[in-house]
Amino acid sequence: MRVHVVSDVHGNSEALAKAGDGADALVCLGDLVLFLDYADHSRGIFPDLFGVENADRIVALRTARRFEEARDLGRSLWADLDIDRDTAIEFAVRRQYAELFAAFPAPTYATYGNVDIPGLWPEYAGPGTTVLDGERVEIGGRVFGFVGGGLRTPMRTPYEVSDEEYAAKVEALGEVDVLCSHIPPEVPELTYDTVARRFERGSGALLAAIRRTRPKYALFGHVHQPLARRMRIGATECVNVGHFAATGRPWALEW
Image 1 (tube, one colour):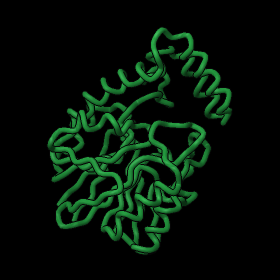
Image 2 (cartoon, helix red, strand yellow; image 1 turned 90 degrees about the horizontal axis):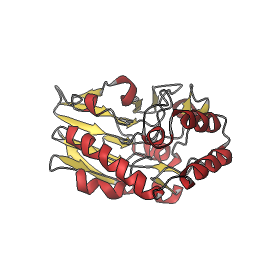
Image 3 (tube, helix red, strand yellow; image 1 turned 30 degrees about the vertical axis):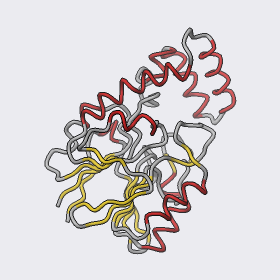
Image 4 (cartoon, one colour; image 1 turned 30 degrees about the horizontal axis):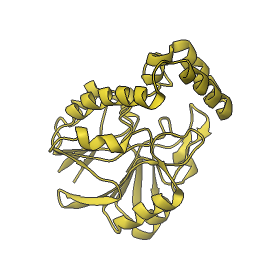
């Protein structure tokens, strides 16, 4: 059995269409939407609406962790538009989702990232795509558990939930062979981004579940340039499957 795993697709539909080649199934760990590419500020919903210069400004503020100033800039830019903020974002996200979901091979098992909008997924997920969040599924005789979204941060991305709600989703999985999530367990080496030079939020509930239930693998994304891409926690191999938008390469799991 061979399963390909991707995360942080961020608009790379061309590579996504090939991600299942040679595999029995594809697993996607979220962040389909590209709102703003921190490596190329000309790409994404934000520069399409406000231009590259403003994208440069807001990335600089966020990188410096000046989040209030970044929010003030964002509010002023939206105020100058002739269209409602939510309407503009939903229109742009729908356009991306139409292209990205069409690129999924069958079968695909997917969960949400923190920048995704779960309420729109049922409209685009075809019969070959199974969406799971706080749920489990058997693939090739192994039990995969899925936990979508992220925890609350100053970035205020679309699908962030409380620590309690997130922990409840992890608890609902029980014992699994492969624990799949968008964000990593709360381990410094796995949550630190070496380019952004900051710790992203990891989950203590995921870490506790790994120590308690000892899955064979814990797979995740979210941190684009992690200090450590993989490490063992007891019996569990923890793997950041990579920033698919940049690499275009899935991570392969075989048994």
